[in-house]
Image (cartoon, rainbow over all chains, first blue to last red):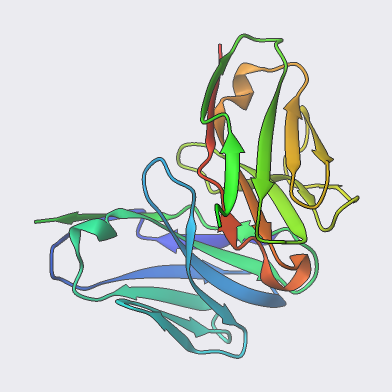
Length: 112
Length: 114
């Protein structure tokens, strides 16, 4: 069964600090891996998308990395801001079909 | 562009009642999706439509029906609501289904079934 596991489930960081979120997946072969940000009460918003041949992708202060050999991805948030408080979801698209596999998300709280 | 829009934003139903959740996108996307999100769980696919005129079951289709009315609109119907269907429902769309996955999500519909 295809799975996407994220860690930690939640974390608290101080404003201005960096943090890294982890995503391990078993979906194989896969087409791409996305990181989404979901603010409370809102729909997810795509931050980055990487194909299996890409190692890293940045979007402002967000940098995603992908190791297709170990089936691991990470999302690094640099110089966190209060607006970064949200859930971050890792999603893997299989090479065939439309049935994405979603991770359970990591809830990030940035404190002043 | 409005992106993906959903109506209503909130809804309370009694067990056994029926309702239709509406979704529309103005990005000329071919594929559309309905997900539900329960506390502590990832989004789960209910139904999807790879292109206009086609629909397929996702991971949790029981108790739901869908209609791809045209390229823009994809509705989700609960014929006889049950408390287990209390959830937040998200509609999403993407340009292509097989390579991109859902790229744009709507704001969600929070449904409570009493």
